[in-house]
Length: 100
Length: 100
Image 1 (cartoon, rainbow over the protein chains, first blue to last red):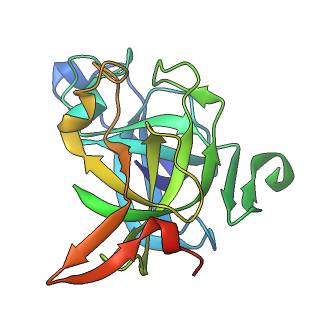
Image 2: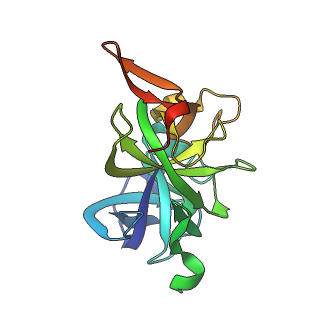
């Protein structure tokens, strides 16, 4: 799984019927230590109700279809977790409670 | 499979993985001597790995071939703690000598 920050949403009206009813999030991959954005973006389906600027992690490939929300959907990227904290070498690099 | 070093943990309470008691590791992609490459991933811990250890990572749909992760939206698993890596008669990694 990769760590990213929610930068926004992607809206599509004209789409495959199997894509209907799901939120699409615009994610930017971040370095989990510095939290700096990498300028690398991906569009992912949302299965946890992630909000703008939250740090999340997401799955790619066939695993993206295996949440309750995305079962049978033609997605290859799905956000499966909203991150509360990232710890590296015994110190927090990110704490959601402090970032709000 | 690839080799990675355990650098820390990632905590997330809002998840859609359906896995009770899941522990997520922050791991850094690394070479066979254990030197990090600066690329981080989040991996589900299957083996009780600790910070500093070299682990075997499985990625992609193969991650669902354990009893615990069957049909779970998982694409990165730490499936083993590496004891030693040998190449051409030289020991590149030895867990029991890890004090580096």
